[in-house]
Amino acid sequence: MNRLPIIGGIVALVLIILSGSIFVLNERDQAIVVRFGKIQRVVSEPGLYFKMPLSIFDLDSVQIVEDRLIRLDREDLRVQVSGGKFYVVDAFLVFRISDARQFRETVSGSLAVAERQLGIRFEDGLRAVYGRRGFQAALSEERLAMMLEVRDQLRPEAAKFGIEIEDVRVLRTDLTNEVSSQTFERMSAERLAEAERLRARGREAERRIKAAADRGVVETKAKAQREAEILRGQGEAIRNKVFAEAFGRDPEFFDFYRSMAAYREALQDSNTTLVLSPNSEFFRFFKDANGSKKATSGQ
Image (cartoon, rainbow, N blue to C red):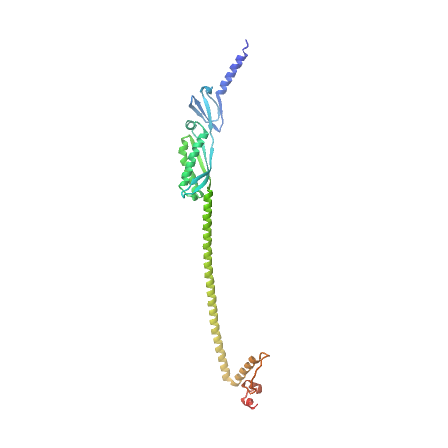
């Protein structure tokens, strides 16, 4: 009788049992060993481990869960701030499975279920934090405090699933399309109003400067004219004084000088025509250098 098939079957059975009794854990995972539906142990260190074989008979089975930082994103989340307007937020949180046993008992070790539960609470936390503040808070130094507040709100809820929240970050806070249009129109109206106020101030300043300049011109002209009249009057007085002194010293010469000045004024234009009597007093110095009246009457 050939025993080789029997020996081969036994060897194959042993290999199957051995392969079902060994599992390898890498550094990015942790393992939950379950026997008859109950958690026997949690393995978190990488290496080669043994377990009871034949998991198909509800003996030991191994569930592998993540042992690394996991990122959960939320994009285009619509939130309402204290002013009643809506904004669009992009944010993410970073978490890790800190208690694999609790993770298995609450969400059956399913990462998808855990992320769905965390996502709901993450959105609620963001809406609550933004709802207590205005839009400017997310753009100021208060933004860090807002992220820490969301993280601290999530941590107790996440701990129920064996999850630890490492960090929360807000990437973007933008106006929604309708609010953006309204804000742009309001800002445009404010800028137009400000521009009109500046133009009005400019026109008022222009009027003040022009009025001051005009007043300065009038005052300067008036002052100059007043000073000119004073100087003219003083000059006339000096001239009259000089004439009077000259007349007092030599009346005949003064009379001659005045006649010569009269001739110059009357005859400076070559086209001047005078119709006068030859015996006119005007010509008496033409007939006699001394201007004697006797010479005039004798002609």
